[in-house]
Length: 113
Image (cartoon, rainbow, N blue to C red; front, side, top):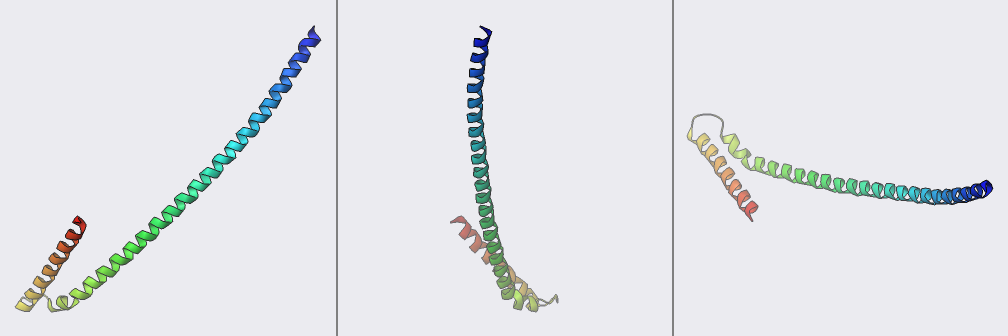
């Protein structure tokens, strides 16, 4: 009788071992799939971050160009504005302020649309 229980126990042990091996293989495969998906997600994130940084650099470059253009436009009037209390200096300063106001209005009207 004990031999029968031992054989039944051994049989169930073999079945349990087979199931354990099957589930282990499935677990390892699922883990590998998750790692692959994570690597793909990180690659996509890195690509997106690269595109964002590239667009930011382009925007910074355009802003620097616009700032240089504004400075070039205002350079002549800044030279006239030498700090002396005369009418030419006042008119040059007034002209710069008017240009700044116009640029601000243009910028705000573009932002509102």
